[in-house]
Length: 178
Image 1 (cartoon, helix red, strand yellow):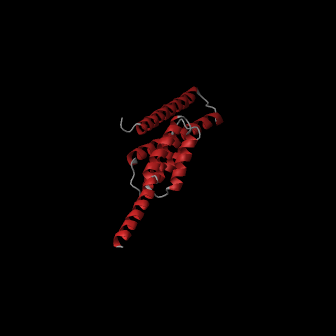
Image 2 (tube, rainbow, N blue to C red; image 1 turned 30 degrees about the horizontal axis):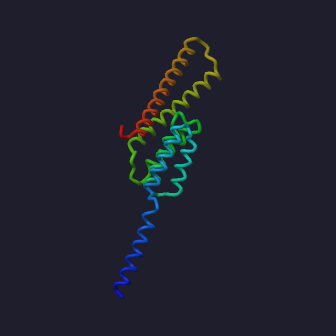
């Protein structure tokens, strides 16, 4: 009788283990989600990449992997090639990632990317402001006009450098072992 109970318990335990092992782990789901999001972003489908990451965050809220998904959403939102992205939204995601209590795989990269995005945003605002001022008040002399043109050129150069740095970071993250 004891032997039959033992065999029954062992059988039930094996069934329970089999059911548990057949379900994908959060880590496996994360690997698949990140791979799909990268493929989508690399082919210019940023909205699809963002949606995959957002869905993962919603279904695995509070997990370490969900926190990492927040980082990747921020990265793709500040990508200059993402026409539907925005520096503000990307900075917001990076701030949320950095404020998380979860252990983070990309903390130092997120800090640099956040500072770079903030600089790009301020340069963009300064350029827009300068262009608006230039249109609103025409310069009265050639020196003032030359000074504004030089300032705009300088800001555009800084913005180009920031965009190049964002591209470098994106490539580095896409090929972490390289």
